[in-house]
Length: 486
Image (tube, rainbow, N blue to C red):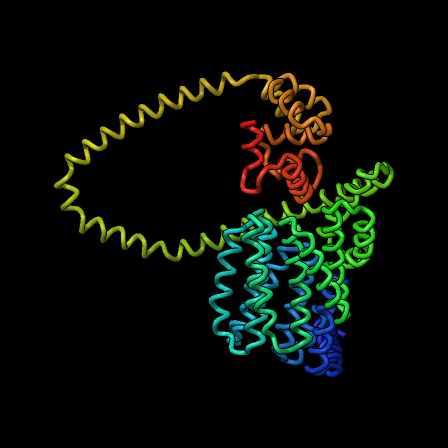
């Protein structure tokens, strides 16, 4: 048998297998499978199901099955921290939904894109995409789909604000607006599912506001609602919120209990972000309790995950940055001909006036030359000043960035007055807190402190929050400026 005939037979065999598999499914069965998938803790399993139902729906010619499958795939990628793949799948859903004039699934794709952009740090792009989602959402006709989409849009904006470390007083308003939309959903199961997710988010924001009673209330509501719906992953988010609240209240045993209830669910889900937070918080608790072995164990696990996350985010950020630039370039080239034509017309019309006021422009040019000369002179002065920067200050920065053990000793020598005043005013401060204050005095950002001390950004924010309470510094005062002016 020739090679061509063999290939034809193999193709026919594969086609028959796919058709047989597709015949085992009906649109109703696909819908039921996908509905159950949203509550799975195992994101990899959810991903496999989503990919399988997408292919089956494609063979059946079932559009909604493909769209819903893509939603499952996107959610799985977001949960697994695969933001680039989430963006690619969201683009695929957007293209598919637009071809079917399906406003609801187009909105869902935009909501997912906004979240992925925010997780990668592209906050301007995230907000821009969120606004596009809200604008398009006005065309969604089904009430439940409209309210659930608006709830997701405001929940997403709350997440963007959290990731930018904006004041929680603003974030809570957005959180509660999301709850308001979700509460209007008529389908009880869908309403409870969305509210369980959002109650956890509200609880986290109340932790940032130091309102522990409210934080516990909403985290418990989230847990109980998710439990009633047999939704394990959202039970874990509720348990995490309770554990985190008890951590802030310094009720160590309760915090450990709830964190360890949530831990196996997040491990099954392979939620590396939430796992890193829990490992880091458990390390903090065991450090308080002076249990060195457990502190070392969880600190190591937190550091390992932090390195994985950092490496993954860097690779994805680089790729997405290139994609955004390529898209903007393409758009720019398309508009180039119109821009050139406009410029030519503009100069043709203005030529008469340019000639008339030539002398005036010449005078202005001479002024600009003088200004440029002055700027060059000032730049030289700045260069001279920079060359005279104290060598000891540069050395101090290097010690801080490398997390050198001699950093604090050297800091005392460079800033003796600051160190003495801080010690005299707040004699109960530990060596670790003094070191943290020293980094703030040197104007290190939250991310820089996290990088050089090998802890998460969230842990740094928690340390800042505790320091504010200890030193009685208001939340609207910048900690770095306070230390610099102290």
